[in-house]
Amino acid sequence: MGEGCCKWLRELVGDETKEQQIEERKSEAVRFFMIGSGGAGKTTVIRQLKCLCKDSPKDYKAYNPSWHLIEKTDIFSQIEYDLFKKRIRQNILSSINNLCQQSELWGYPMNHELVEEVKMLQAEFDLSVIDGGYVEQQYTDTIVDDLVTLINNESINKTLKRSHQMLPQYRIEDGTRHFLNENDIRRIFADNTVLTSLDIVHSRYPTTGIQDFRFGIKGMKIQIHDMGGQVTELVKLPQFISQWFMNTHDNNFVLFVASMADFNLVDESNPEFTVMDRSIKTLSIILDMPIVKECSLLIFLNKTDRFNEVVRNLLVTPEGRAEILKYLGSGLDSKKKAKVENGTIEVEDLHKAIDRRFQEEAVKSKRKTGVYTKFTKAVDPKMMSAIFGAIECEIVANIAKTIFT
Image (cartoon, rainbow, N blue to C red; front, side, top):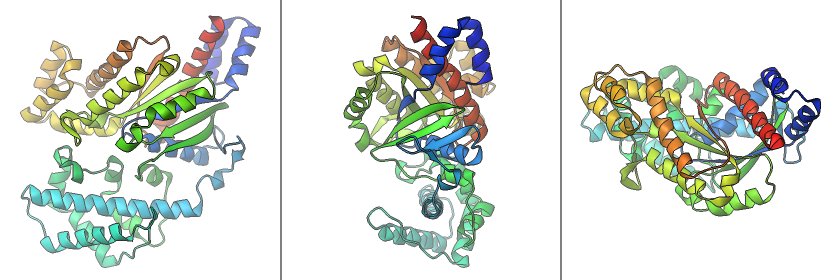
């Protein structure tokens, strides 16, 4: 148990027997059912934990289904590294193609020959996917030079700044933005490139079905069931969560991951709502399940970095400020709304406005168990390390309550 947790626990308990009971309960695995809409960052959370196990093995451990330790050198195989590299290259190619298509739709001047070349490369890749796998493509220096020329293009950069307004089919994955610069494009497409942990957590491919992961975080065992967030996966939610809960009723948490950056993105399936509206609706469905009312709820409001970037850009113009009020005004009082109107509001106040929307759903469900919210940036190892340290204390507090009641 962390020293901070130990200190307050000793003050709270004052009883070695009770403290021993808590330590015994703490040795049991804490189970998380992780859910959220597609693109919220659930897979990034898992990858970040794996990278922490690789880079900080003293505090973080990865285990197989039998709780046998996975050595840090075996957390990612060479096959996985190669697959990450292929996927990141494809993420970059797809994003530049989407930016080109959207730029042309908006009437920005583009080099049509380069645009057609990227479109052709994208089409070739789509045809090369066999049985869900990836066939290695050859990228010549000329192709890489052309990608760099496009990403440095003024029209592409204008489109990037308006990316939240792009058509749904052309939207850029948040993680891929990390690579949309000349240095990273040349590095990733180099034959001898060696991926970093930061590269791995920024790679993007959707989770399907339910996957099980086991970790040790500063001595505490964590078991995470990661369910796919695609619409086709969410319809299976009642079945999956019921099966998960039947295994044990102890130390269960629902971990809900939502993207703050989706607050103003129109939902492709229902244009009257935003992607965040759909995320909140999913949370509402989960909270209405009687079986979930017995679990504590942990909400990761993820992608704080991307959210901050979007709202700071919006605050610059009257139209942008009106957009913030349209989507976040319900969580702001009159003084905060006035600050939005004159462009002086702090982004932390807008964080709280989003938090209120999710907390309101938790209140409606009349839960008997705790609800914990964390603002997260899953691609940042330091932030995620601090968050999981705080979660440890909250878990211990939750265990202590069950012993004292």
